[in-house]
Amino acid sequence: MRVGGFGSPNLGFHNRGHSTLTIDLTTQCPADFNQDGGIDGSDVGAFFGVWEAGDSHADVNCDGGVNGDDIETFFHAWENGGC
Image 1 (tube, rainbow, N blue to C red):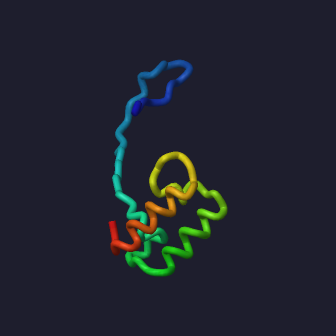
Image 2 (cartoon, rainbow, N blue to C red):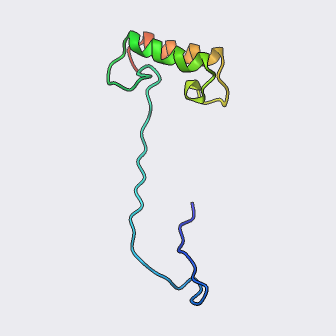
Image 3 (cartoon, rainbow, N blue to C red):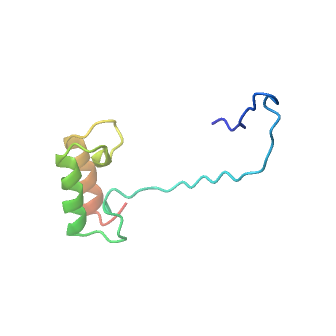
């Protein structure tokens, strides 16, 4: 990650200022696919809706592809009631 300022044609990169960088790391639970806080049939419908469309959000095993392995990962978490 690189954080820098904006240059000015006359001043170079001498511009300074204050800012805040916030990084929020969250772990998505593949079983709560619609992220409503519960694990139920709505998650199955939401998952298959994007999976059938080949949407990258259905890549729940994070292998770079949307395929049957994602179904296995999703249902493993769903059947166990969570993550």
